Every structure is written in structure tokens, then in C-alpha cells.
Image (cartoon, rainbow, N blue to C red; front, top):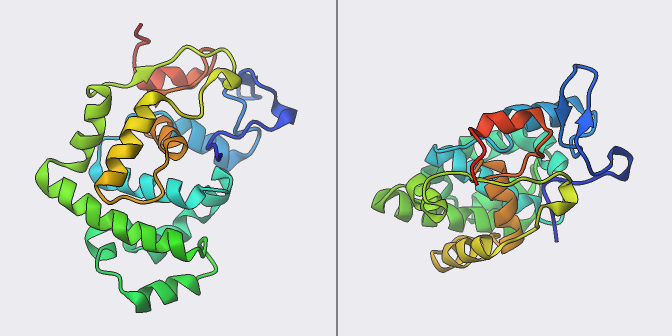
Length: 210
């Protein structure tokens, strides 16, 4: 099973002090790109439907890979997929799929590329009916679930809620949305706040609630 928050043994399992005086979750290690993502994006509530679609698709491409691999290719992905505009992606044909398969800047996996197209079509249906953001956030009653973990190993890789969301997404036509991928997605877009209790970023998600 893939996990967005890898735990390199060299960085341990608890919050990691950094030279800037801040303490962070251990999974970004000392990588500047990873640290910036951890500080500015991961766990912050995202409520824009287009941005949520982009993250959903990228998490699908991450399956079997590390998140840092996708993060380093994100700009290339954005260019290749028309800024993750679902309306444009939904119209991709076989010729466009072949073009993407020749793009060395992205992950060239035909099933994942075709899955992104199907997911874009499913996104359009939900967006037109109620809004993709509204649909997703309803699973958590509109507010982030705040956890209280001291160690990264305490965080699950999937939950009953991610299984429920995964099942519903699949039924609506989305692809590459198994419960493990969906839990990582929920963490990333702030539907779940799994920043460790000692991590300075917990404040980004608001006050801790029981």
C-alpha cells in the first residue's frame, strides 16, 4: 500500500526539530521542496473544486510511488494536463493519450492517464450537480477531523471513512481511488489533520477539537 507520508528511518517517528527553530512531522526530512509542501499545503483545508481535482489525480498517479516523486514532477503534470482543467481533460482522445505517454516529464502509465480522463468526466457530473468540494467535504460534515498523534506510526493508512468515500467515488466513475489513496488525499487536503501534536503546522487547521 502506498502512503503519502513516507517515514525514512533516518528521520525517526516523532516530530523533528529543524534549524529554523520549528518542529515538524518527520516525513519531509530535510528536503526543502518537501518541507515547503509540508508547511504550506499538506493538512491545510482545501475547498476549491479544481484544486481538489488536481490533488485527487496526482494522488492516483502516486500509487506505487513516493509522493516526493510526484511533487518533483508536478509542474510538468500541470503543463501536460492543461492545468488540470477537468473540462479539457474530459475531452482527451486516444491521440492525446499517446502524446501523454511520450511525455518524459510525467509518470507514463496508460491506466493512470486513462483513469484521469474518466475521473474528469465524473468530476463534471458532480460539479454540475452540487459542486465537487461540497460533495467531498460532506463526508466530514464540512469540518476537518483533528487527530492527536504523537508519532507518525499512530496514523492509519486507511479508515472506515476513507473506505466509504472510496466506494462512493468508484460508484460515480472515478478511478485510482482505493481507501489508502483516499486517506492520503484526505490528509493532504486538510479533511483530516494528521500533523503531529508537536508540529508547528497544526495551527494551520484551526483549533484542536475533541
